[in-house]
Amino acid sequence: MNTIIGYGSLINPLSFVARHLDVNFDPIYEKENRLFDSYKIEGVRDCWKNTDVSYYPITITGFKRFYSIKHRGGGMLEVYPDSDASITAALYADVPDEMYKSVVSTEDEYNVSIVDLEDIFPYTENTVLTEDITAKLFTPKRKKPVRSVKRHPVYHDRIVESFAFLVEENLLTTKDAIQFLRDFLKTTYEYD
Image (cartoon, rainbow, N blue to C red; front, side):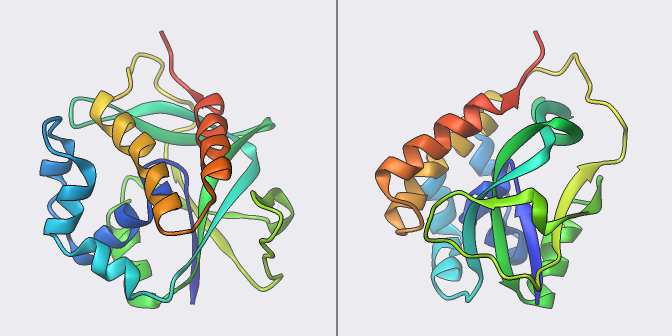
């Protein structure tokens, strides 16, 4: 089994499993479409409910998150090493090999980096991470963020909307989800 860390759209479990189903993401980025309606049409919600993948909100030290990669007409998120920073993210454990390969194939513009367990902190008190995980994080191939890229507004809105799903699926309490969203926004940078 595999462990993957998501820090942008992959914070959303539906976005995570959609990579495995080879979903057409174009409608999701059309502002007039609602995020969850798009996922319902593609059967993504059912896939998440039927998977044995475990979801853990986490904080990772040693990285800083930026809107940096230009895609679909706006900035998408990337992380870069920074010993003085931390980010909120999602850790997916017990990812089957086939699903892992599907997710990795959608992140081909990135390197796969290993995050040490000592740099991963559970976001909630009742989460215990085992010592036998090797957490993989998608990091950009270039060394520094692109400073001229503005965030993609629909992409950003979709990530923000996904925090409601975490409550709906009992992955976080409402209080924890609100704080997780605040911390996500506080640890996400955009250049003017």
